[in-house]
Image 1 (cartoon, rainbow, N blue to C red):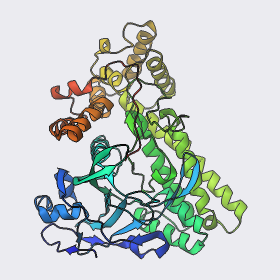
Image 2 (cartoon, rainbow, N blue to C red; image 1 turned 180 degrees about the vertical axis):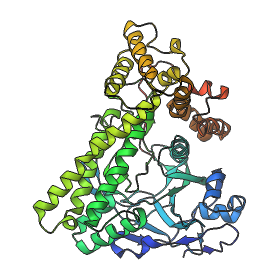
Image 3 (cartoon, rainbow, N blue to C red; image 1 turned 90 degrees about the vertical axis):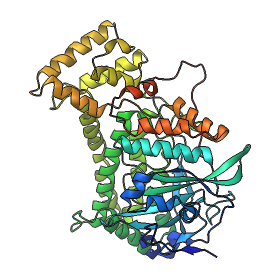
Image 4 (cartoon, helix red, strand yellow; image 1 turned 135 degrees about the vertical axis):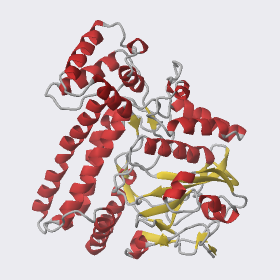
Length: 491
């Protein structure tokens, strides 16, 4: 039986709107308690923004909720059902190791999902144990909070709690539960699940719920479901541009990992690119490069096409006309994405206005970076502070010519060089979650119980545009290696 706890002190203020959808979209759950939970890391600033009492949540009763041993009195634990194309293959899925505690309503009226990841079995576990290991949960905490600091829409981590129980994978690993905060956990896969059921009324209920929750101000007078499709496309185009601009590689862009809200979700085999190469892949299971850095915008289009397919019965009574409307909407993605990406690239180069030749200027720089195996983040950082000798491009005639063209381009705008440099400082991070630094932090935490390495890393990642002296060490790329870096899906 689920044990509920009074919430006056901690500040939990749940509603459960998702539970008011048709029953086919979720399964109600009882808790699967763990024996000896211990708070590993807690996000006080996020707690405060959610109108939670950070101090109270770090006490015993608060940790019991974060560990999935108790539910706030207004909570209603459930697992969400969804489907997804995983590397192109369709599968019926669901929250196999997560539960939604409820939706925290802040004093400003914001609604945020509070989900426990690694909380135990659900009806969608498909034979799994429903648990999670400490390393991957800490990894999600680090990367998601770094992404937030970079200004990229993302789910966030409120806390990680160790369970005191082993998780059996290839070896015994320490178990953990992450508290994930999201604008919602609605996915393209949620709509695929609804479409797969073949019940148009349930699909319509989901679409109406999504419009009300995420797009309440959108004009839906003409064709509300076409408006839904168009708004999701806009958000994904902007999100993918932000990913590309910081060299982020999601690693597993399956349709169940594309959030309708436009947030980045699921930090399994993700990583950040060091040397610039559009073909960069880190995921151990992406052997064909389906989700390589340069392919991400195209895979977003593919995923959005699957989303559009689910909406066809709602777009128009005639199938042919519905398909035409969907195709027209999807065709807007590329132009929207390129607009956001070019704008972001101009910012990274200190350009306030737009000129026709900018596209070639950007393309030529990236070509030089790829040719000379230059570090992506540090090249822009060097340009920002005119420290060209620190790049792999330094001294080459091609780069000298490019640099001269860039300086001439900056000189044609009315803003000063000081304004231009400030724009670049605000657009080019000093640090990203370098893969070797993340691994270093995780190894210290998991193998030695030493969380100080992770805490120091987080301290610099949470101020990526500070360009402070203490960030210098964390800006260095890893030493060259014959073994490519590989990431793995969370365990």
